[in-house]
Length: 222
Image (cartoon, rainbow, N blue to C red; front, side, top):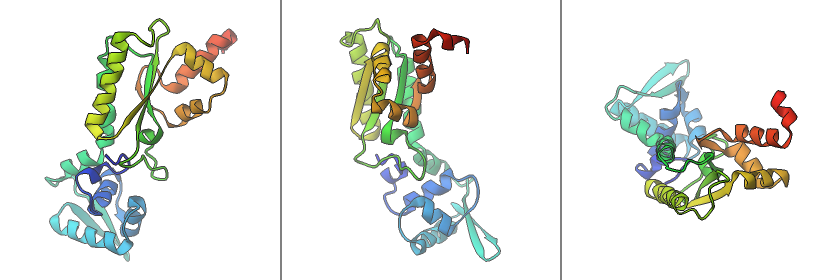
């Protein structure tokens, strides 16, 4: 699945990116704005698609001076399907949260990072070849080779592959091992801070504050 344009899984033509933009928009947009946000095709091509979608009633058009502004007709029978396809990434996140919350051995923290975590239009969320990267922090009392823990993690990776078709990568370590990464200024910690999507437990920033407080108890009084 193209994590940046999940609708392209079903609508691989230029219609997909155009509908993706309209489904995410909370205001009317011009053809040029839609083209810029879609990041695909030409302005003329996007306008032709908007004209056709307007003819179907799925898109509303409004004249504003010399400009034409477009929006998704959310009352259209097909609009719900468009919104669902445009938010497959959100569906993935909700599904992973639900699965992890049912684990017998709960992680201290779980999150997505990397391409799967990015949503900003200026920082695409990956494509068909992008891995879905997952971070799991296990309690110190749970060994890395604990059978149940390993089975839970392996099943989660299988779920990701089944839901997206993308390869899944797991970075798994204990709370103490995470503290070691922080102490040695491992670069990947910055990635987890800047690109993490929270799935379970405290968010990553709160987890780091707890680690810092453990190292310097005076922080607990601040």
